[in-house]
Image 1: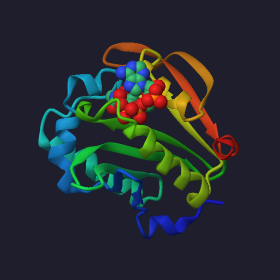
Image 2: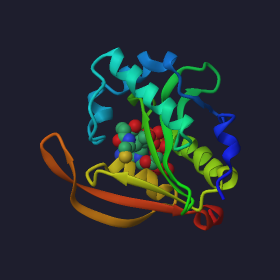
Image 3: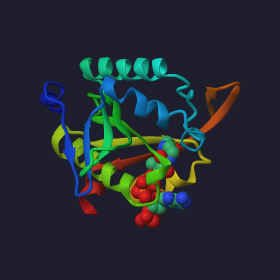
Length: 188
Ligand SMILES: CC(C)(COP(=O)(O)OP(=O)(O)OC[C@H]1O[C@@H](n2cnc3c(N)ncnc32)[C@H](O)[C@@H]1OP(=O)(O)O)[C@@H](O)C(=O)NCCC(=O)NCCS
């Protein structure tokens, strides 16, 4: 069901304003800037990147996950200038059920211009039409209203609310799970 060819040749994606390319070690400084930003990390429930080494290790892990055929890690760049804007990923690829999880972050300089909707549309379309997924999942901190609004705009439906199922930084946090089925995306 999953089209394995994309693990040989990384799928670069173009939209009208954006270019999504493979995350590489050269992106470490930009990713560090993004993932050390207080506003960006507010609901990410993962550690900030306090130095370049952390970002390099993060990228290295992502590259290895791609090599193991378990995920795709893109950086979002401006189509014209090539400037770094954020990242978007499809990971936790579950071949048995043709399902994966999407994750995304954008630098605050670019928030509110429909960029993530545009990037997600490209990644979801790739996931369903090229990779062969049947459904895509997203997991948010219930306080992350912007992320929820984005998912609902993309047609995701709420599937679950887990109470205190995620331990981070000394606290048990709630999670909300959303999903999009291929047939729902086609209807849009
Ligand atoms: C979530 C995030 C990626 C949204 O990126 P964005 O490019 O600003 O989003 P878009 O402009 O494409 O907007 C998508 C929808 O989200 C909603 N939205 C966007 N900004 C919003 C805001 N400030 N408040 C409330 N809703 C908002 C709107 O419904 C919007 O759709 P519309 O423009 O048709 O009304 C960005 O805020 C971000 O990187 N946040 C920090 C990282 C993060 O929390 N990632 C998600 C972890 S689960």
